[in-house]
Length: 137
Length: 199
Ligand SMILES: Nc1nc2c(ncn2[C@@H]2O[C@H](COP(=O)(O)OP(=O)(O)OP(=O)(O)O)[C@@H](O)[C@H]2O)c(=O)[nH]1
Ligand SMILES: [Mg+2]
Image (cartoon, rainbow over all chains, first blue to last red; front, side):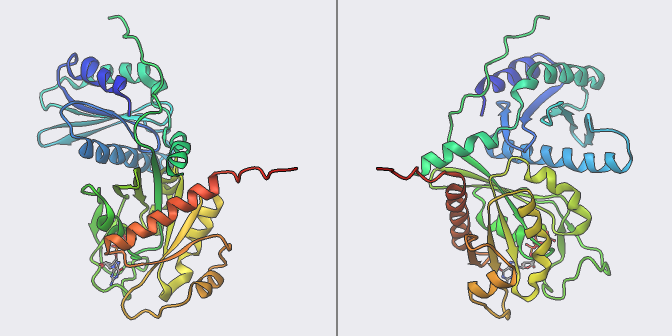
């Protein structure tokens, strides 16, 4: 888990971009990398798994339609918008925006943020195996 | 606006974690298993089954009314290691998701039902193909004959080192034992044997 990345989600997205209320950063393999203060960890981990699953489902649709890879997804909820932004590495940001948010502005800021932090959103599970192996012995 | 200083790559701190993929044919008990063992409320993507689809034969599991349409997800702690369990959907039409679900996984559980072992062949082929260490979980349904591990190993043509574990997918302790067996198997498969001492 990255506290630096969580700091950036809190300060550079939630605090700075009007309309963004929560966010999680997710590696391509569905590992929660960072989350905002308003979420508890269990919920954040479920959201991370859902983000990875959404990415995969939507890419399945995109393949059948020969329409290129998924770059993002917008889901309208009764009380907000759920915005998925795919990062080039396969990672993603899943964000909750308020119902009255300026979606064009919000998605632009999310794209900018994703470009900035892209390097930190690399697959992370594989690297933890050695720690687990040594921790067990 | 000036770009913030981007932090260094994630430190390797925090508890060790492993991603585990749970696979097996339609209705073999994957969602039940995740629900039984997860320490948190799992992610479920169940949908009511429509009647009359040949892909959805529930004659062996008459109580089944829903099927997984994307994945299962749960988390548990085993001996200080956090396990993230991802279940694949069982039905053929969702197989395109498997590659994404196994990404980053350290090991896999293939669930089998002794009344239809052959339904698990493709799942075994798949985990072999992606070179994931795996254990075979034999979900004991009521009325199903129980077979010795040697018979199951032979019927499924499993390598000698693949653990075979009998489970009740509804029972937390039983599923925990299964996952502990998997973690141990993953560790022995990925930890090189110490070099033998030459004199
Ligand atoms: N008796 C008994 N019933 C079980 C067991 N495990 C699962 N079941 C039942 O079998 C049915 C199928 O279980 P699911 O967990 O939905 O199976 P699944 O593998 O997730 O199925 P799909 O996602 O549709 O592929 C359900 O009605 C369960 O209640 C078990 O260990 N014993
Ligand atoms: Mg299921």
